[in-house]
Length: 193
Image (cartoon, rainbow, N blue to C red; front, side):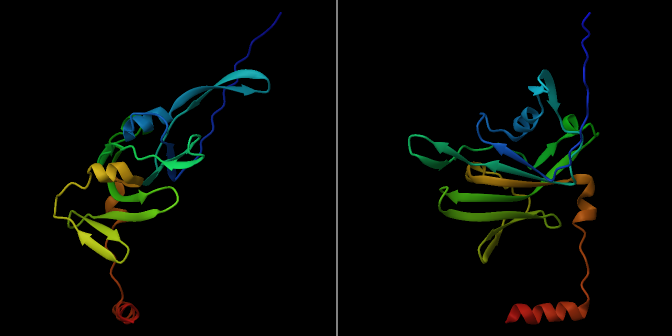
């Protein structure tokens, strides 16, 4: 008389960022997010079990990192993966998070040009109040024209990290703060040195 039992357990893990290996094509952000939720077989105390990974909710600021290197046996070293990643300025994560209208807006992009051993990082940050993107490249910064889309083939090919904010949290998290006049005066003195 053998009995079978099913062991069910739930674990919730909080996260602030998601890493994606660039191993599965096509490289589309929403497909990568959907594929992150998966069923897999695991061994638990010698018994076969099934594991299901899924998102329950996302943080107010979502950081997505792409692992853009892989080991190449032919070269005998790590090489950069220059495949473009398709992503949008606005993404709806409602289907993944079980929250209605869970809309996120892109507010920063970190790109890397070069190889795995040498290169250069550049960032793009959105100024929401002016609806422009600012390109920060070392000490230089350049503003885009208002309402101009930021995503292009160069950025998609070199995107290393994306930063999204939940639209419902944008006002609270990006609120302009007033600075005490004395503090502002001291800051200007420091910057002028």
